[in-house]
Image (tube, rainbow, N blue to C red; front, side):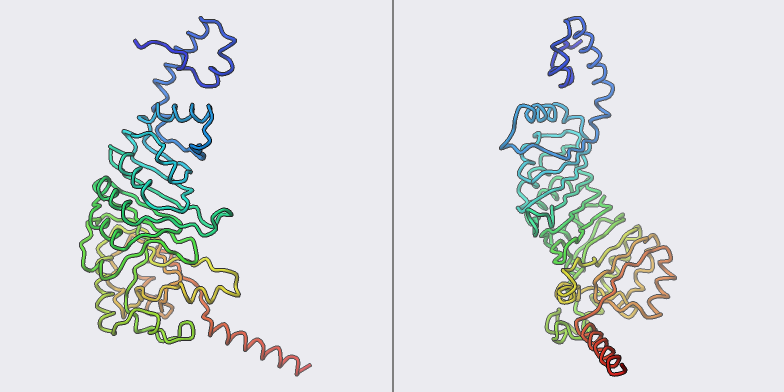
Length: 381
């Protein structure tokens, strides 16, 4: 039987009550606490939610005690949720033997070195779920972004590819298409891949269409895919963009090239028959209305799948499990009866997300019409 120690008592007992207890009472308390630890600590420490983590530059005695306790019970932690900046992750315990899930939010400006270090050392058991969220649009850092290029994905592929089931990167982030695609080619258990675009600029991950075509995905059980797909020629876009022909600012290519590439993408997506959520477009959070239409013209998706029957949409008819389809702020033309009838027939239970959109030219026409109406009313009076 292991020795009973005063330090086995809860911190509150040590600091306050302990001084007023005799030796016999303390011994009883220690034995009760040890039994409590044995029975309940594996359950209580299985999931840890730390909404605050001490800055190493300002540690006091309470912070050091917290860190010691955190390290002491690290072997019991299976799931961790914490709000920290990435640099503080380096002060976490060197190892969590059974940790398989982590949700880290509150990340500021920076690169992927600290996150990569955390991924490499954090889970000998193998990562199953990783969620990283950048702190965006806050008063201190109004345009925060986080750089996940290079080292982070190297660590992910080396230490998590065979076990990873969920990866979410939320907020503004820089992620390379080739890294995302390589993960899809290397993670057979992957079920959820989500890049959430919260800002106007939406500088998060996206997939290059040609890279998708040239690769072989192994994640056949994928249930959630939230990621832009770009670099697709769209000669069918004939309207002006920012008062210039669409061809000026979009990917060049002819109709046959565009249709061939799109149909290959549809074919690959159509094999993911367990998909419940497919988000290829995201609502742009614009500036005030006076600037909003102009900014949407800049950041709206133009080199995306057209999502029309003529472009090959029918190749997705096997995705019977879909419940959410996100097509917001994409240059698509799906409001005609053919596409709407197809959605109703093949995705009857899915919510199709689109965005009402007014171009600068449409807005000017509306404004001119309103002005003419006002003038006419004045003349009538």
